[in-house]
Length: 468
Image (tube, rainbow, N blue to C red; front, side, top):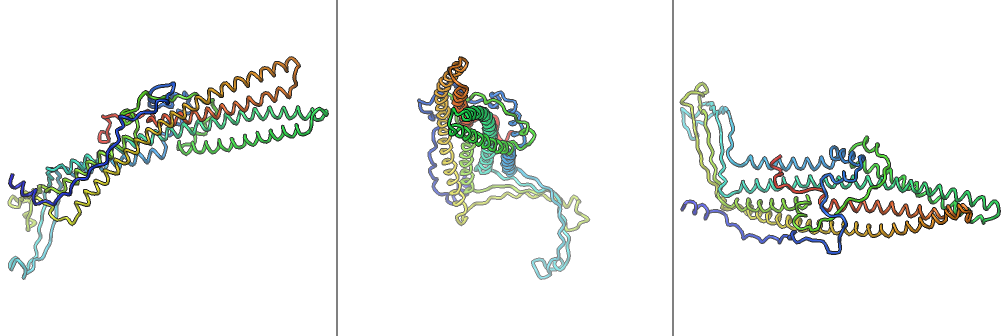
């Protein structure tokens, strides 16, 4: 005990610990009371399959398999796991085998006079070299824990990259389908306008209408064709964006137009601590906070004495013919204690740096919590607003359909002309385009909300980076 006290007293002085930044309590995170959705619950794993679209499923399978972004995340995870293994290898006992031959000439006027001095000697040494670093102060354990925290953060980031990719592929696919659907609707509108233009032309030829009415309808036809061309270009761009996300050509080239589905996104009754388990980015931030705290412990342990034991067991001789003789056997046990007394500020700088990393990690975690709650609130509010807008649009569409039905009935009874019937059809096409745009917005908001709620991810306490 006195020896231990003397050793500790001789160590370098450790500066006063710095108070950490306060961490946000995610358990109290909730949404405003006015944000409610009809569908309740958290998203499921492979949530995109609920859209029941085989083309989307095929795209997602290809993306998860071949996307370059996921390969990058996987490589970073492997690097973190390798760093963890390296830290574990530095803890405990190590054993190496070594064989060496040293041919040397000893000075005749040096430490050893003749007959030893002034002669050539060949020393042979072969055996096992071992080292045991006794981790009394937990420096190695803390470094291992810090490396494990970083590896687990990379594991969570890998899941986050997959969820981000899934959301991007789904949104790009639905954008492509929306472009195609709107293009088809505008083609129907163009056909109606062309029929109306032909009717106006006949009336002008018969002197029953002014030429202005014909030119106005023809201008509307050209404007509609312009919209068709713009949507065609947008669809080409979206297909190429999808190709880049998926990382393959065949599955993207096989995508065909398909009706837009209904939304599937819902909202859980409460967020709280469950949001931490559901968001991989929050898990990554939490693990980095833990890693930074362990790094502080490792930096503190560096102020205390390091104790290790070196050993050698083998053969050593200056006569190579006697190398493996019984008399050439050699065993060394060398205990070693190193006390950091004056380190020129190195240990202090290392500890201050660890404290700064902890503060940065906590600040990142706090910001991630705010971002997570904000993402959910904005996503749910967007879905809620689109649902209300959709209800109003449905009523508008019903009234417009009633007007068209009435005009069609009068046309069948001979009470109105074909031009009036065609003109009554155009508002329907316009509302159809608004409906498609709103469906597209609903699906984008749907996917954004699913991603904000973690995209089906849930932290598994048994699934850590050191268990794969």
